[in-house]
Amino acid sequence: MQTHTMHQDCERILLTEEQINSRVREIAEAVDRDYQGKNPLVVGILKGSIIFYADFVRRLTMPVELDFMAVSSYGSGTVSSGKLKIRKDLDRDVKGRDVIIVEDIIDSGFTLANLKALLMERGASSVRIATLLNKAARREYDIAPDYNCFYIENEFVIGYGLDYNEQYRHLPYIGVLKREVYEK
Ligand code: PRP
Image (cartoon, rainbow, N blue to C red; front, side, top):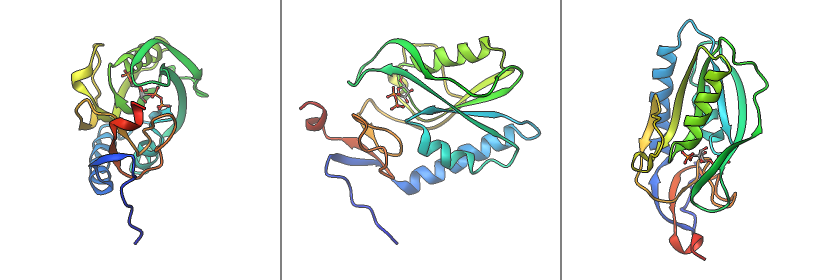
């Protein structure tokens, strides 16, 4: 079996592949139970959610439709700010649909609070949120995920979809980025 050594820009590994796999499986099983008999539209928010999304949807056993949105709330730095901008909208109409939004991380809550409101406004029957990571201490908006894999501290995390300047998304684990990398 191929083994992955830790990337040199990582200070430490926060969540291993095994920890992630087993928790994603648990969350997907909970969603699978809750949505039996339904046909949810599973909306991945690009790009951070893609790896989680791919692992998550493969565990669902009911009929599902897959769709994606790209929004921006962050600039290239590390602080969330500004207005939510839709860069790629859904292909499917959400009217009357049960929507599950899949995110990699909920930080201030700005993105998900705005997205949920938008999809409800468009006539979705229900909107729930599944997130990989939850930085609960950073919350500024009144929004909580319905399905949460891991609570994390306020550290700069990369890997399993998460980036810094578009790097590190492909790492199979979640690591803490060395301070010297983003303070350069
Ligand atoms: C990240 C993440 C969420 C948002 C969370 O996206 O995927 O969408 O920020 O922050 P918030 O709760 O403070 O709104 P980012 O803009 O970094 O884009 P990416 O997914 O393409 O990396």
